[in-house]
Image (cartoon, rainbow, N blue to C red; front, side):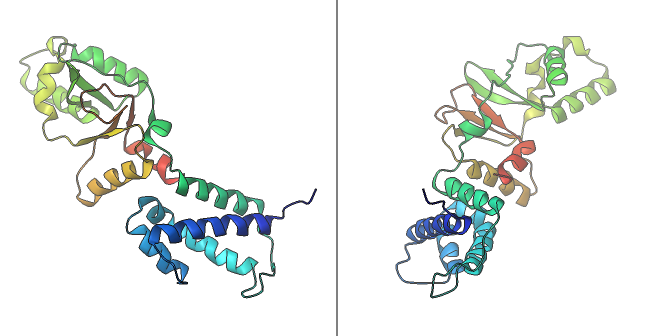
Length: 234
């Protein structure tokens, strides 16, 4: 049985990527690969995210294969072959919100005692707890919200923490930003949401995941700013 060399495997995968990207860009005639990437990236978030990797592997492909002869000039390392195959998989089937972020999401209701929820947040290192009532998302109990409440209680002394309910925290959740997506939303769309708010110098608290993306469903997953590196390293 003939063994496939690294160069053969690399070039085969690169050719699959090139064809896929050309189809996305609607390019029929030969054009420089960077031009094809730019065109494909106009309508495809995954291509835009992987553009630099794709350009790097385009240069490596040219170093491996002599132009015009298809003669192999070098053998890529195993890591390069593994990485380009992974890139191809991500291109044709990007990881979804359900695959990356599906988990049991702890929620609370307006009638819960604030300190009970804070104890859970501290125990499990939760930074956001969605507040639901009758399957309606009312807001997020976040670390910042808790700090503001504690500060105001200390200043005024009007109520004690043991008397404070989650519904009393609702006024502190005004102006929060969050998004709700379906489980089949690709991970790069979620990354875009976070980057969009960074550019606007605002804070996106989290992206909640529901089975279909409907707001009347309880969350089946959650992504926060802490998850951005997870998406970036795909």
